[in-house]
Length: 250
Image (cartoon, rainbow, N blue to C red; front, side):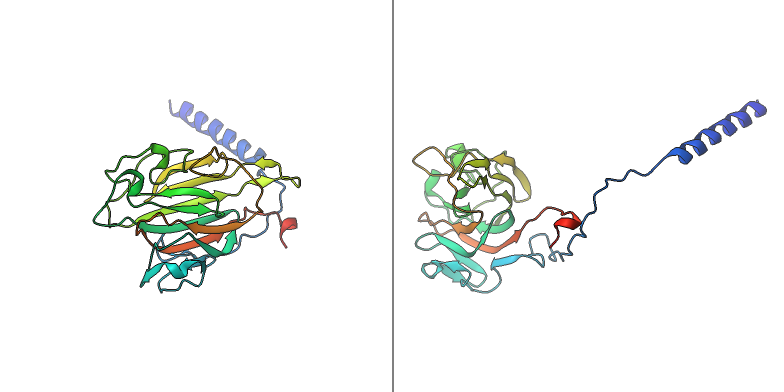
């Protein structure tokens, strides 16, 4: 029995040795550029070192067009009259924004805590008080307006802060203006995945079917006035570029 056990161990050792001897490391053959170093924020909500802060911890509205008709209260931006648009423009990007529906709640359906976050100034992710407030599903909070509801309703009660983290891929067009690739969005609402690589059908108007039109590779972040005093804070954006080959690095 001992002799059999010894022989078995010897054979196993030989097999393992041979396997290690013939194994080779897989190489992609790609010469990757070194990823840039980005310092993350102290929390997941804080802007990382490469972010463009559109509204932060001071009552500074200089990063917005049309914001002189809105109000500020310390680090809070309150909806006023008319849509506002960021001075900076973005294509593929990561957006973080926090918002709070009015309290006490007033109105119902689309008349309660209504606003919107517009990517590239065109494509709306709905802001709405959807806490115990029924409306059409592709118009509730975290929907792509008139195109898709969110996967779930992750709304917090009025007066509490909600967060959107949006990962945006801009649409691509040919030189003659034909659509080559639609816009895509992945997003979380209060840390809950609600949109997963959804392909937008076009823009997001109220009164017609969506359609695409080439308006350039970048556009502003826009916030909607819908007559409700929705509050916003901690708004920042990161341009996104995928990993690059060394030959692509400038």
